[in-house]
Length: 108
Length: 108
DNA sequence: CTATTTAGTAAGTATTAACTTACGGTTAGT
DNA sequence: ACTAACCGTAAGTTAATACTTACTAAATAG
Image 1 (cartoon, rainbow over the protein chains, first blue to last red):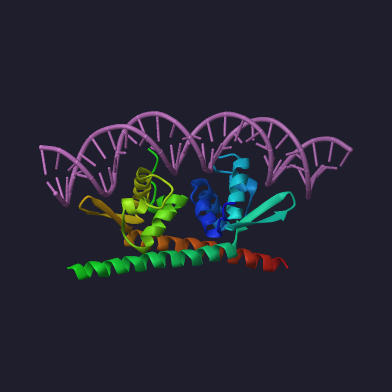
Image 2: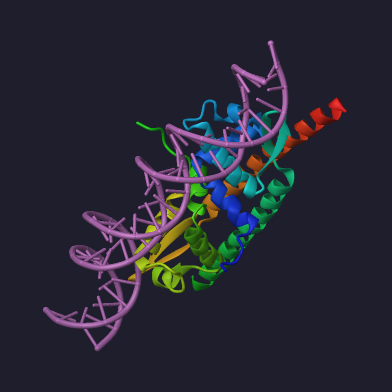
């Protein structure tokens, strides 16, 4: 059994696709039904449904059923978690860089 | 002519691949030559070279030639830019969420 | 009850992108 | 000059995944 994939891994994968980013961009402004998300995008509605599933699985968006409509919106918890993860991610990378720079200094 | 792809777009694409994330993870700790990056990874060295090109194109890493070795390391400017971009990215998403929550309040 | 709207899923196709092998080029050492 | 180590690129293959069409189901309107 391959070990489980973390949410941050899923989020990276999810936002790696341009169409999914476009979808997330739309939802970043306001909640939307699937038809409204698909409208304007260069792919079919079922394709959008599939992308929404991936984004939902990564906890970047959440669903809100309303009649026959499925309203999607950004997911606060998931986004906060991702932001925290990335803050550390970049910080560690930058402190590594700082260390390298210091090593370089010594050589001069 | 399709319009140019922004660096943030490239960075999203670059980090969307698990192998590239693994490579970036390695470099996050210390600069490494290509052989050393490939060592331990489940793909061939040329594959690693190709991934490095993508990461470099996204300005997430930079190269530093040293004899026959090409030493790669994290790219400060690129990372700072991406961090700034994402800060705004998440902030806007979260403020959209806040707006939604307020709308919900009014309905109750 | 029927028709309409909305949307998820299944199955298959097509496209993308990751990967491998083979090759060539550069640098350093002997 | 020859050899060895390191690495990028080209070409082709394989594998992943994005996409479409067809279908089904649920909810609402008339």
